Amino acid sequence: MPTVTLNTGATMPQLGFGVFQIPAEETEQAVTDAIKAGYRLIDTAASYGNEEAVGRGIAASGVPREELFITSKLWIQRRGEEGAREAITTSLQKLGLDYLDLYLIHQPFGDYYGEWRALEQAHKDGRLRAIGVSNFASDRLVDLIAFADVVPAVNQMETNPFHQQVDYQELLHAEGVQLEAWAPFAEGKNDLFTNPVLTEIGDAHGKSVAQVVLRWLVQRGVVVVSKSVKPERMQQNLDVLDFELTDEQMAKIAELEAGESLFFSHVDPDMVRWLTGRAES
Ligand SMILES: NC(=O)c1ccc[n+]([C@@H]2O[C@H](COP(=O)([O-])OP(=O)(O)OC[C@H]3O[C@@H](n4cnc5c(N)ncnc54)[C@H](OP(=O)(O)O)[C@@H]3O)[C@@H](O)[C@H]2O)c1
Image (cartoon, rainbow, N blue to C red; front, top):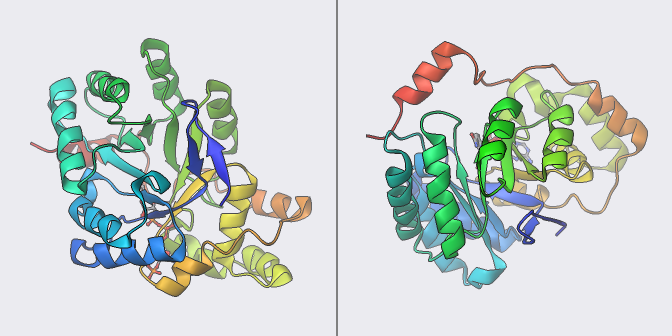
């Protein structure tokens, strides 16, 4: 398993398993299957509603805690530093863990400066081995770094062949922040799994489109979390280390950039209203 070194000095596996949109009652089995397939990085969030099931899957796997890299995320809430402190404790309790390898502020809305102070304290206490953010555009990230004590270790962003984050990855690198990809397959949007360019490249290596996408991200030095509830796909999505994309193939994938999110814009006021409306009470 390739790894990256975070600005904390810790190593993080480059290929991980995400549990967004896996119903709680299916999550324990999915996590057990994923760990059995070889995943060591598991990505959940308070807002996914399945942290307890993730915790049961981890416990059932029998894999020692120190071999796993567990991430969860703080959802938008209206209680700043104090609320974040409580949310960290709640996530740890639900997961049945005494520390997280990485904890992210899920969305760049609300009092995330106050929340960041709570994350920094829990990082100093050792309960959060690394802290980071998700969905932070470059201006908000640089601003946070300018006023924070601890530089985020990771920014988890939508990153896939149609929304590649190439320039942003350079900026993150310069700031010492690791790019982590969410929705590497764009959840199948834009007919990703039958894209002719990706299919042709996959055929040349005897690999699937999904494997081409994951290999492309690994070669770019991006950490990636993908999701599947099917054990054979979980395995397929790890089997990307025995081939290499050529410079020409990397260049062809670069041409698929569409210039915008396939999901939503974090600077669209209607979307901000909708997301912040989902804030925890
Ligand atoms: N920070 C954030 O705001 C944020 C947002 C979204 C996601 N995430 C994280 O990123 C993770 C991954 O993103 P995602 O779940 O949204 O989407 P994704 O990984 O891009 O796509 C998942 C979809 O791809 C299918 N799939 C997986 N492997 C496949 C394969 N080898 N061949 C064909 N189809 C395949 C899955 O179907 P089956 O399950 O039926 O196989 C599922 O429908 C999430 O689980 C979550 O941890 C974070």
